Image (cartoon, rainbow, N blue to C red; front, side, top):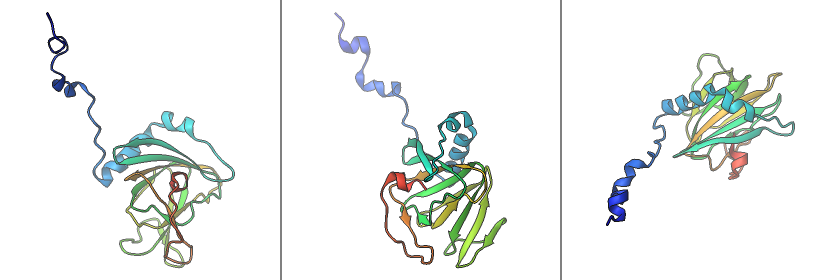
Length: 186
């Protein structure tokens, strides 16, 4: 007579049959590569884009171990407001159109090619289609569509986004923490 073990095999030997737990990227470059690979799959993200005349539209596209990916659309004039991402680092990739990013000058921020120093200790950058920006926890910035055409962007946050702290435009001190995931996709 056959037993369950003789028919199905040793149940302790089954883990090799289970799918491997995916490993999340471990470096900023790997997260930027993840964003580029998602961006390259236009057939996957483009049909999901929506536009909202009253506020930025956003949708969480994907989650993985320790990260999440958001898709955002921006009509002309729409802005994220000045904010940080709490304990999350991130990679912003412009998928369509162009966006302007304003960031606070401070420790670790410098002026690079195509970057202008604005008034009040801010740096302003135009991010054209395909441009990427990586940032660490505590990075204070605002993203705005100041072009005449709609824009779409992809945001990878690690760890997943749990808060977004709005900042006053005239002070480096945060106004308050917002923990809503919908408000946090910035």
